[in-house]
Amino acid sequence: MLAAAEEMESGLRSALDAIDSARKRLQVSAALDTMEYLKRSGRVPGVVVALGGILSIKPMIELRDGEVKPFGAVRTTKQADERMLKFLLEFGDMERLAILHTNAEPRAKQLLNELMSRVRKSIPVIFCS
Image (tube, rainbow, N blue to C red):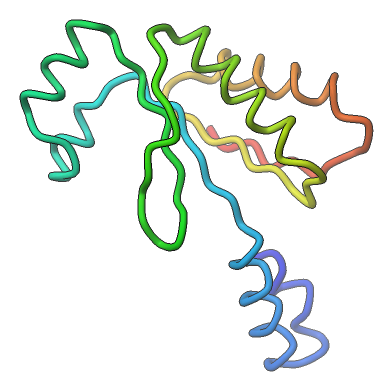
């Protein structure tokens, strides 16, 4: 939406082209503390969620080609944060970064601060609480 807003002065076609271009470059990834909502959505069977809970599995997922796909799993929140940080650092140049969290503001801010301390250029950041 930001890309479209930035192009609106150039006209509707330019804004639509900006949306299409941004959609192709957009990367969405998440570290989940629980698989409960994956179960509720029907993406993961209840028995897998129960086993994952017993083993403290934290799934790592991404939105790719319009579908939610797993890209890993870890056992602790710290490992999830480290994996997400590594993933973001390996991603390359970012135009923008949005950090979203659900009731984990200190953890999200810590991840953001760690990332920004390692990135060489300034990135516009959107932090959603």
